[in-house]
Length: 284
Image (cartoon, rainbow, N blue to C red):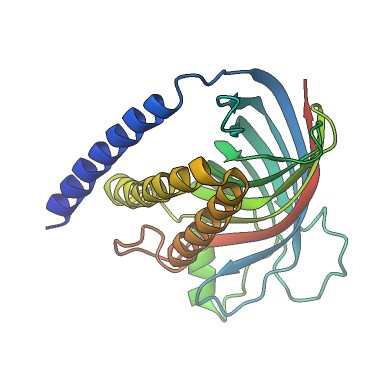
């Protein structure tokens, strides 16, 4: 039954993707592709959690760098539409060592290095006819995280100990989503603030994970179709609607995966890192 469900989901996703591609091309045949090397540096105040885990994690913070190429696609002059896309390689550390908050005795400290690939996008809102713009954005990326616990639960709590050992001292696959605001003062410099949820999985199960990601992308495709119809009529409203719908959708999906890593398929809870981030973006 699960194989039939996966095949059906895959078929629907392919049809949806083809329909989106045709409509996008027919609407967007005048778009120009302008790519620029881009660096984004950010710092975040983070929290670690694992559903059903009785021990307490120490506070952690996130230091993160993204390297890639940004691409602002400009539509025809009458529409005033543009779309920002930033494809990047991500490298960061979620650690107790870089967190400035007071440490508490008995809480579990960790240092977790990660890398991955992702995409950040949204529709910028230009103000005053110049370079100043506000970009409500959504980002998602694939991650590989090496979990390194500096302390583990003691042997009196074998349930917590055994669960954490499934993550500790090894690279684990996961997904991350981020939503926030970029404020650009010039074409080359922006500041940003956002919220990120990273789900890290005990193990990678190809079919279940693929099925979960197909369902996620199908939902994103439906939102994209709705947003495009709004953008045609009201570009500013379309940018805001895109931001609200996408991030609400991702929040729901990632919250479900935090308890069941390959939702809607049966699975274990993910190890989660929640971060409130701020940073700078430099475009060349």
